[in-house]
Amino acid sequence: MSRSLEDRVLALAGVVQAAALVNDVAQSGVTDERFLTSTLGSIIKTDSVNVPDVFGGIGGLSCGLRRLAALLGADNNPDDLPVLRYTLGLMQLQGKVMRKRKLAGRLEHGVQRAKQQIQHFGTVHTNVLAGLADTYLHTAGTIQPRLMISGNPTQLQNPRVVNLVRSLLLGGLRAAVLWKQCGGSRWALLFMRASLLRETQRLLRQSAGRYA
Image 1 (tube, rainbow, N blue to C red):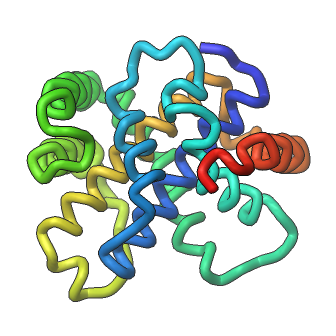
Image 2 (image 1 turned 90 degrees about the horizontal axis):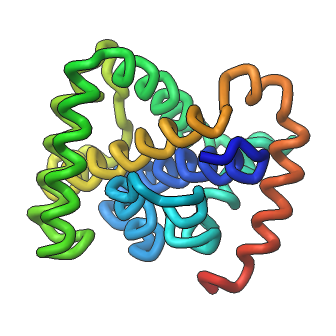
């Protein structure tokens, strides 16, 4: 996989997009299905030749690029705090999961099962979400301390919402692995913030209109 700045930003936007969608679903039970499909579809694209293809093109990351630009920018919006927390949490989780061979094996098995289910049912079918949620629960969900999701208690008691949240977290985990593969690191976030922001803004302009 390429290690260009563009690819790193796209992978990072994938993590942020998953985090933003998790926050939407936890608060209201719904989110934009276009970006939901891009994030969940990325889980099974393990043989893509480039990063944009993982998400169905740069347009599939418009939401993540917008939210990433906000996180990297100078303005501090309290509404972005949960998204930032989930993003950083997913980055920590990917390292912990991938260092445990047994969990990495479970993750690979779950992704292969998801490929078969998605081909049969479609990306957002109830059976697919249940399978993806189960994979997350038995891999990253076993890591302590667990990544805690805050939101509307009524929504978070709904089994479909719980499955959707866990499925999106698995999508975020996929993007976090991709970020690492593209050369992303905690140091890059600390010392390349200006470069990451400029590239994010460029890609955001490039994606404009693709998901208008």
